[in-house]
Image 1 (spheres, chains in turn cyan, red):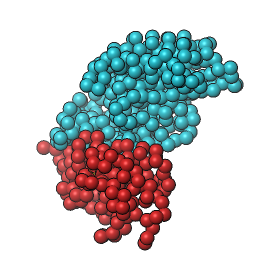
Image 2 (cartoon, helix red, strand yellow; image 1 turned 135 degrees about the vertical axis):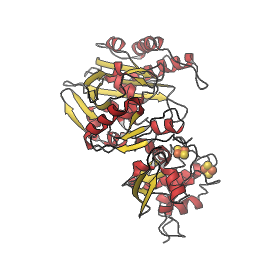
Image 3 (spheres, chains in turn blue, yellow; image 1 turned 45 degrees about the vertical axis):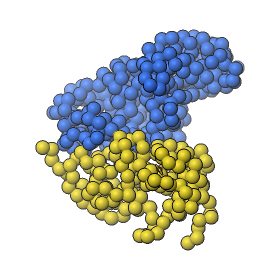
Length: 297
Length: 161
Ligand code: FES
Ligand code: FES
């Protein structure tokens, strides 16, 4: 349970960090909060020969409004993002999701970008990113590109990030809300203990008009497939409709039917799919201000 | 052979400097290099919370970071919570009063987590206390006495000095 030997370098700039990545090929790894990487190194599931520390780079912390999105720099700590009222106002789903991420001790070190790059299929922030259709800015010494969250995660702990690339910022779309409309979001999950990885998790964001009709919706499930899943086409079926027990059940069933969950000692695939449907139906009802008791599940 | 790194940090108010292997975790550094064995090491991969310390005042798991990452920062271990040698902090006193420990393995981590909570919020409610210790496992007490101890510490009852 001790990490294999490595060389350590604290980068003074993003440029230097990118240069080190390019120089060492796949042998170097970036470390920010290290809340996933350090345990993986302790278990020797990861054995980088060089660690490049980017946790203190001011250029990778903080956020600003960028058009119709909030651009959050990747090494912003989860605890800072959680505590930031301005950010919570602009992207409320982010705070709703963060409440479920690990514990205070891990959120005090862990970063938003680190969680996205680690790409655990049951992690909360990748689900929020998929549901909101966040865009990820990746940089290396050779190139710079922007990838949609849906295309970034390829499988469990597996992303399109190349060995020499660094996730530098995430654009979280902000939704405009018209006269008389309200923005609602819900994040919920079922886990053995609060703070553990979810057996299934759900994220929902809605715009409701003054008469309670859904004008815009985004929905997704985590922990029930190789990557978090968003269902923009199913969400679109809710547009122009009132969300009630029957419309919520219909969409939740259709979403769960598309999931390919794994089985483990805590929950088999069938149970996970059932959980996904139940969580999604309840989250939709709660977001719409409808009673959850008496729902079909 | 990877090269060792010289690091400096402030631990419980004292400046320390050591040359370490980068792979040494902060908890091993505190225990093995500095002899501060109050901080316990349980799972070594971020599950149990026994290794919690304050880093620049915030609770973190010291098994989930390398000592080199704490270079230049302030660390407070359970040894640093007491006002003086041989004395107990109000919270530590409350842990004794409320029987908040049995084997004591989780206790340093619990104290650190609860200390950080009380610094932030001197009068936490039950839910906030449970949330604050959510990342700390205790196999003995069933947690209830720990919650009671934090309530006791946050009340005025223990202010006898
Ligand atoms: S020893 Fe650090 S969390 Fe268990
Ligand atoms: S007192 Fe024994 S583990 Fe908590």
